[in-house]
Image (tube, rainbow, N blue to C red):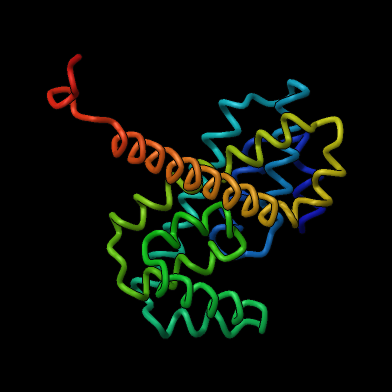
Length: 215
């Protein structure tokens, strides 16, 4: 099915990309990131418009999230158990989604849209069954999907001449993104600590203006 979708991309373009993204976010195993990479490469060649691909993928991803969320909301834990029982891999991903939701709360929704995207489709019914408020869910899910689609579409756009090589390593893209995010977070934290430390030390050794000795 994946090969058939990729073959249809140059012919039908945006509808195929959007449909594949929607199905993947509903929990059907499809290489969404690879499909968006090829979509970005078609934008680079001028066959598709970025302003057609990007909103279509964001809308499809958010639509798939809603299907999963409301299926879990109406079906409850029984639906989640049946959803997870379709295979050992799916069971592991559902268990990871539950654990991550318990530890991170609504932040887990945002993170599993892009950084841990492999858990995202399984997080949706888990969040619905757990009774997470819908407004909180969409407030975290929509920005996460916007970032997710932007990352992979731009990667396909920038590296369109090496799209096959990029597609082969896309499975490790989440690891690269995670490392980058952690590195940036640590750099920001260290610079802030250093800034406040120097500022505090400077204030400690400066005399107040009104108390300075006049000669």
